[in-house]
Amino acid sequence: MNSVPGWHTVVFDLDGTLCNTIDLILASFRHAHTAVLGVELDEGEARSWIGRTLVDIYEPYGERAQMLHDAYMEFNLANLEALQTSYDGVVGLVQDLRDAGLAIAVATSKRRSSAERSLAAAGLTGIIPLAVGMEDTTAHKPDPEPIRRAVEVLGGVPEDAVYVGDAVVDVQAARAAGLAQIAVTWGAGDRTDLMLENPTAVVDSVDELARWLLTSD
Image (cartoon, rainbow, N blue to C red; front, side, top):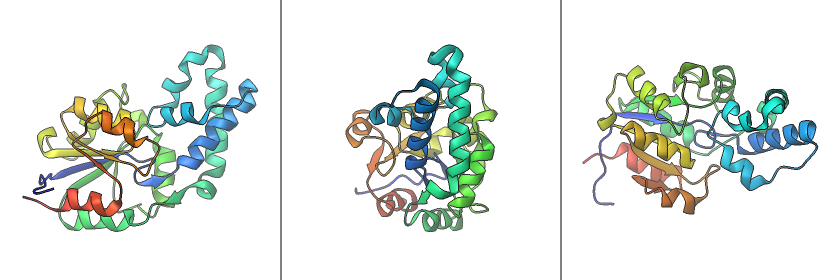
């Protein structure tokens, strides 16, 4: 990497990017499927859901959609602090970005109340704001609306902004919104699947991400 774009606006996904909620999310999906449908859920399918809203995920289940949603949320909220863990170096990176004067925020498909709890559990409250939660837009990833909204909240422009996420829908939404895209491999997304989306960059560590975000031309 010879030169790195000097983006002034950085928007982050939450789950699997800033907060290690993957085990929590997968356990919540499994619980809902078992409790409501009486069947086990394939982990690969569950991982492919991460990054989307629960409303979109469960819509195909018709009259049982609300029951699945409620079972998921009950388990997830009861176990959030117990099952969520941290990614080493993330808090320091976010602090460094803020100290460098970059405009930073989170845009997530998660409800605001849950997202705020995850940020608190990760030690990120007061360090990075939640610009967009599920309730703030009518369309959701892979639609670009949440990411566009986050850039607007930060007073930025898409051409000078980058979105960082761990899922294919993150890359797709960021590209559709006109942002650069950095895919991280420590979350739910499969590295090969992320590479096939041809994002601006695919990074395997927080240090590598820092080199993209903190180094300018």
